[in-house]
Length: 605
Image 1: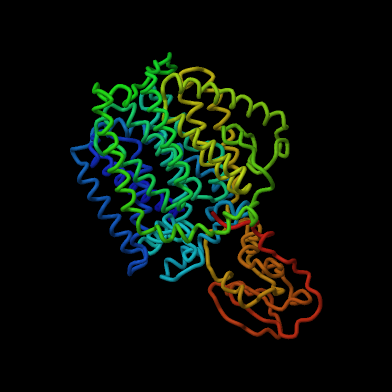
Image 2: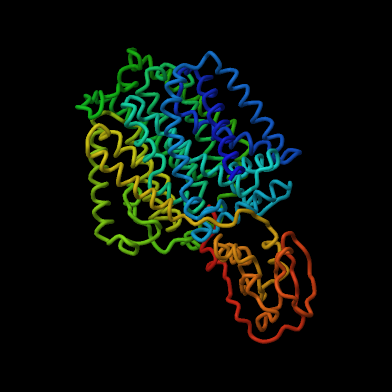
């Protein structure tokens, strides 16, 4: 627990300091709730750029510390509205922290999130372990984006925070930072309304579900996409941002974070949103569309239509395009070192529609889950498969859909071009994944766009009673997903994976402490580590001195070697395990074949 929350504190603190300093350097002196997401994007870029230097993460930690202290010094006596931000942000962060602790409270221990839902974390832990040791890995060779992993490695080699605790801390921090980032949209709302609205947007049902299965990259991509759309919105509705030559730089930094977290696919949502937003703004400017009656506040002024702070479109246009150029150039400079790896990543197996595209899913995921109301602890289940009758799913989906359509209409009347563009880009990304991709990538597209859908629903309705009905229903669904999250082992070793080359197809008996199997979701974890062979898994406390017939190899923890088997030959030791061979083993083994598709129907993304 200490290591997990130490990682949360370091990541959140560094993200807030770096992000606010970057925004302040663009000319903004007041506090911006885009800072959490911008800072996390910078953190990914800085750590990945330095993690392979001598020290394997130590230089990263030192550089982040220097940048964070320098950011605080730069902001000292320059930052405005810091006290008001603290009064709003502290309760939101605390409530998000409590929500993310629900899985650990329900399971009674800390460990690897989502072990029996999705074993992808094993691959990420292995890649981080190799990175921490200065070694290569399959994911590194394939161009897989390892920005988040480098943050965890920096925590591990500099602060002694375990890899499991580092990833758990990162996932918790992302949930907190997402809820804080959502406050950007509710700046003009009454204080009591901002916090629940931001929490529902930041931890909407699909985001909570992906957190529950340990999918940190998808929650980070959802955060960066939400922040990118809100950054575009700030350049339109925030008078402070309109005249700044560097007003698009925060959006560019968020795009950098997408590259180092999600590689080139992460830019699909951002490019789509930026393109649609530009078309909408030019359309509004050309047609001189009047602002309709706004719900929850006055209609925001369109910067290009009115010339920003009162200038003409002709005067503002060139300035706007220069601002775009500055942002694009900065983006290209910061991602240039990653271009080669992005090209390598293009051939990653997840992108193959004929490959293992089902992942850990049972079938197609309903897009209505992205609207926030889906009363199931497991997002993969079809309506009625859980405790709630199918009618409850359909009623919730219909209610959320009606509110979404109404929210889109109100956003159009209020000329909320950024929100409309963001939602449209998310819808198009989902359509493309559904038609030309896999079920696995289509589900991820729903998750990435889910916070935008929740924002489109909540923002126009926040001052109306129906908004509270949606907030309560959506919050209940998110809490249900969090309470159902499995929590696996609290530590990680790559030893089991290293035995795969020794045991081949086995058959292999793995003896581990009973607690690991009964309380820490150990069975699916071990099955994934030794996938590709025939594997029996048993508690060392319950094993007798006669291993099953046909078992050739036995793996036992060095501190829990089980019964005194006779005639075994020790093959090698890889702490905390010892691999034994049973020469001359005969007979048919009862151990089942743990096929790759069975253990995990797909590859991590």
